[in-house]
Image 1 (cartoon, rainbow, N blue to C red):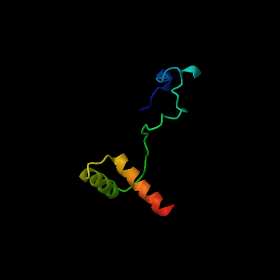
Image 2: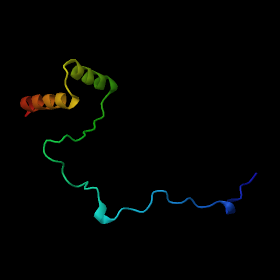
Image 3: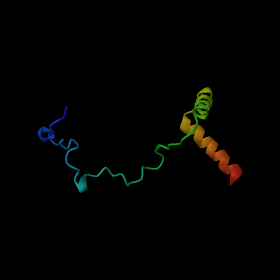
Image 4: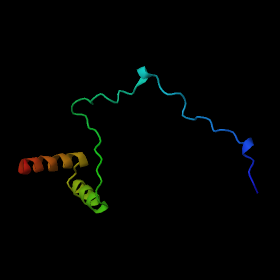
Length: 78
């Protein structure tokens, strides 16, 4: 059984028209000082679980625990 490709239509572009250059999302501007921004890391599931558990046991946000760890690291490793 063969398909008659002459009857198939070309799919339409569902994305719509691109935004005008004046309508950018300001993706090149820095966030205000003090605002939190995401940091993505690839770690093992076991380390992730341990880090989250440690923070939860001490009622810390993950970002606060990371900040403490980073400060300690810089003090002791330059």
